[in-house]
Image (cartoon, rainbow, N blue to C red):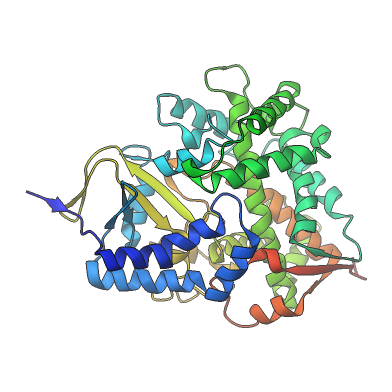
Length: 436
């Protein structure tokens, strides 16, 4: 008879909470908490998490290792092969809509595909893929999206911005791309989403702002009903009330915010070493430049590899599952800590370097799991749109501006890339290039 997977001892469970899971919750898995991000950077929490996982591998084998938290059975994933298995075998037997995820995301997207475990899941996934043109390298409205990015970023001349300043600009980009030009100045909508995401950081324990959620979802529905030409919501099939098309849109707004964080970090990295900008600028100035900017896109993916915007990937088993002859019981919630695999220097010789070339020469496609956009049936359906818009942004900024990064950030990025890098502390000056 098969036995259960190894269960972490009480001391090890406490260490896992302290070094691996606790910092994820503290930093804000849904909406980042800037002050705790600063503390996490000082404590180098991602380095601590990797060291803890290595010790767990030595003690418990390849795992996964179980621990009990507040009546839940959690399985911390330790082995590379297990990451691929969980992502490949979604949604059966491993659901993407886990109890933890549902508890968090229902604060602002109760009918999104990520919170759907019912027979509606397949239809909602298809709805998202069709609207986002997941099967195409460039979205049907891609040229308009790029124009929006250029228009909004052209106003940064001779300004030094912090994250909040840049996020205000990026939020205008996001609202215009997702909802249309009419939403450009709808700051209240973004503020409502921020409030709901802050609640979501606490999952089921978070306060419920039902009135705020109702107003937010009603406003999103109004934009969907009007479906401005050239927006993402125009591409959304709005015929099925059962699938709740408008209910898919909050996640697009949420995901684009994470993309802005990755973009801001990348600009800091590029601004500390001009040689990193050269292939991106050359690509931007090529007379036959494609919308698919290979070097800018590779740099963006490298930013997300180094500092994943999805801190953990979650799956939950519908049934008992076997792992190397041992059993994880039905209902187990599996936790993949992205940075543990992206930055494991025992497996990757480029783990702590900024090396966009890995996305061009095939090294990122090896057997080791580098999954900035997840993978498998529940991989990010908007990957193409995110890479198109962020690549256009970094290409445009690199071509038009000299990037002047604050001295503290410059020092942080002078050597190996830090495991934890708080974007909220970065300041960058944008000065028009004389040769632009």
